[in-house]
Length: 171
Image (cartoon, rainbow, N blue to C red; front, side):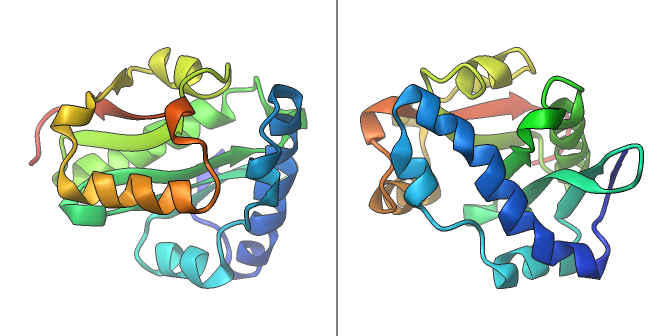
């Protein structure tokens, strides 16, 4: 099930992000583990603005989350994390769909994200869910700033890409 988090669950989300990121070690991306997770303040802002959702286990415990931001007046899937044990159960897809629905409700016709092009649970995962690479020449200024900010945190830029999913209607 996908729903907004209860206020007391927000404190759990950085731990979920850190735990989900452990798999990056397997593909030589220790830098991802060295980056701080999203701050509680950032997550609470997303929650207050209706742009934060959790995936919950059958027992009602958060096992993943999605955070949408709106940089440069675009819909951006800023974070998608699902605990390793719960991957492959459709939670990631459901979180993406919920984020897309929220973006569409806000009037956007595209959902964007940045990801690793060569990591199986990144670009290939998103491509199977309707995302396509956005050529660098088509990046608006806000995306260039986003990319530079992410790279300053340690992401190797040659392995990264921006993708978009068409949502229909909207801006």
